[in-house]
Length: 93
Image (tube, rainbow, N blue to C red; front, side, top):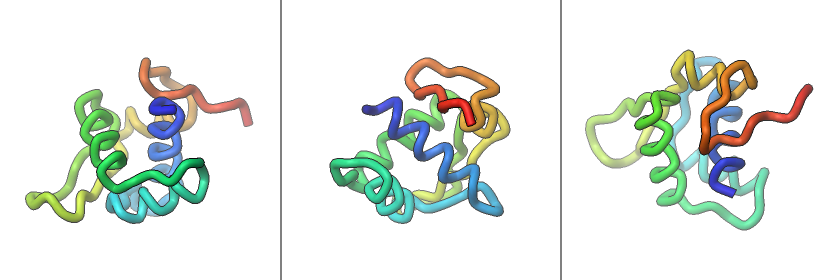
């Protein structure tokens, strides 16, 4: 479930014009796409993990809202060009 949710986050970020969203919008969008509902705390934890492995950057100097920006490596993972353990590989399109 964690790996699938992380792929969902990366995919959502990859579909925005500037490759960034805040954690509250991500929580709402991920909850709409996956069940059960996902809290903002879970998204923040996933974003911290994704940051640690270099797939997103966090663009805020205060704790709320957390704004994530997709890195080039994160885009590669979202599209399936790169595989990272802990993130589900996307299905072929």
